[in-house]
Length: 634
Image (cartoon, rainbow, N blue to C red; front, side, top):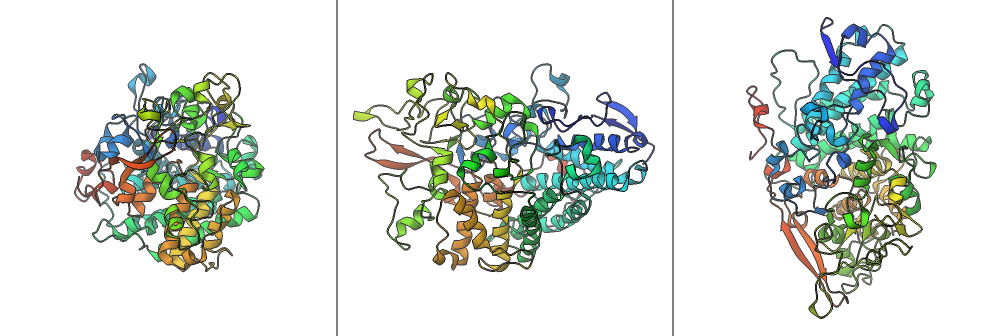
């Protein structure tokens, strides 16, 4: 093992605009001896650095548009986009769709890298390896580090610990990236130099528990804050993107919660029930998330406390700065750093906005009516369905005024008809007030922002990452404020931990019982998130109904993490993606004068359980040896 050469493609620092001081001054793709790589902390960390750039940022890994919303929350008409192919049930097209962040390789412009498979040195995420290829490479690199622990003789114990801690984390993380999309996958713990014959695990739980051991080692070895460690002094103040105990605890919990979820619990068998989880794994997940919440109490993290602070969390961050670090919204736990390329970042931030308004991207992703209607409820804390039932008081939802009395997050993150884009000079008059109606007066055509190429096909835009200052939004011909800020999709932030903690705790102990590991119930966790948005608490009658409270937890997650790329994973792991409520995408038709409103189907997604719950492996992956079965139905 110690006499082979390593061809190393080194990325110097954590990423161009977010870059830290260079760790290793060596020409890219240099072939050096393994003893030279692991002889010092600087060279060891230089080898580890590349794994950070194998973390795929779903939001910036596309092309001049971002197509990362694969759930029931977004709609596209362009057939070359993977989101559209998913709607048709063509999951096997992930193999050839280089515009998707899942694709096996990556996409190049003419002359980029001379057609190589992908380099982590690429400035733009679209030129780097995508989820499959990046994960395979990341697992191997992590195993190379772990296998050569005894060569780290020039490192202090602290330095050696953090090198190994990062490797154990990444080995677990990259396995989880594969498992989210392809399901159970062997836990690869060695550097293969010959035949590979690891059988595919029988259950998701089996491999998740094995990966949990990697997270436990990472937790033991990683620091709480690099800035407080001797090895972190060299990059003092620039360590925001580096792995910590908090990140390891958070992903440990996520690995266990996903393994506990209905899809994984039923293991592709018939009779899946969306309310049945593995309670043992859920309880383990609670304890992992509790450790992150303890770090919050210690001041390491801090929830955005109101909707104004949410802007600082999502996008109100100056260029070349990590979002989620300001005192008012210190929620960043871990994120891929691919979003540093300005053009890609702007396209991501404007995903839900049409190009003629935003000046970036191609066709926007239309926010679906079904997702908004089913999840963005009322200011009184009820879903629209529960509000209309009358079981919790006088209804506040008026079908003839569907945009009134809504959850404040609806107004913060969604554009609807008659919303104001801005009034300042320079914004074209046609773009100052949105006209999203489907029928004009006297039977006329649709509004100028509706049913045209590049505009909304559903009656909504989403603006969650779209900058706004004093009521003025970016316009290509007006104020280009989008170029002043940075927005990234965080792989893990504190709000997500609260939501997963509440879900796992409700599964393990119910809504009103706190675990021994942290003094917070599932009910209290959700109400804390609602309070900052100005939404009423969950109604006691809903809390008392175990299944309805789970529905409410999921609705809260859907709103809080809306348009952040979690949705497709969630509706699959909950075992609901094939149900009408999640399968049928709809639009809202209405006339200019608001005399009628009508929900109309756009597409009935092709989704059968279990076939369309997992991506199929590429055929040659299942032909290496006996024992590696293809996913069901493919």
